[in-house]
Image (cartoon, rainbow, N blue to C red; front, side, top):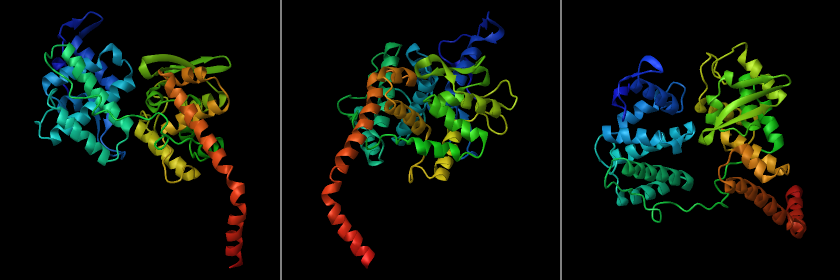
Length: 370
């Protein structure tokens, strides 16, 4: 376990707000909850560890303190962002260890040539450009933050021109697939339990991110006559109160089964369902429903489907952006562009159909005659 007294800039004086509790313990407990736990694998039996402990074990003392300061910055208030960046730091620590840069990760141990090699390695492994860009951004941001807060002379090894992949916003080759309405209904209809149905309907209805949905507690419900809403924290620490349709509110009540507190999405033992469990549920339902053959249904498929269906319904892009909590309007526009491009390409391709009807009919008839 991480020793809270070793966290940066923390004294062990008693907190006047919580008698008998040291400030170090308060900070450590808060960060532990913020960073959450991580399953070291995809099987339910794999070990689950606190991210804070994993960071502590991966970094040397000074780097660990710098990472905690960076993750605690007001610019990184979103719980989901903090967790993603914590995982990115562990990625860089593992890469540094592969290079033989000591048993513990230290800021400044990676160089420009190291990152050039890393980029080639990621390309050879088929990593997506967006994933590479995010990890590079995390590493650069961490170095720049540390340089501003006590690490004199520290420079980021990331070169924006040479290391960051160029992201084509119009590239649809790796875009999240979208379920059409009939496929979505088939997915929901494949549920065997209330919990499975609730996962589908909750993620889709609220265009939710899986981390947001898994973090919800039952006391996040706001119950008023004729309407149940959820008070949830979205990416960037933004607080939102979103109403639930009657069908979803009813499923929440059935799933709660009399519980008044604890996680909204709970497993059979009452424990919190994590994103890996949600992935497994959706993968299972997708195969049972026969949708997206050859690909898994993921939480982001439901979010992308909801956003796309709002576009199909003619909702204003500004309203879709606000509902989906896209900080950058270009993200929302990307969904619109991809959808319209798919419709346009299908229309243009179908326009050639009449040109070749005779050709195809000839071979179809030939085969039937044979």
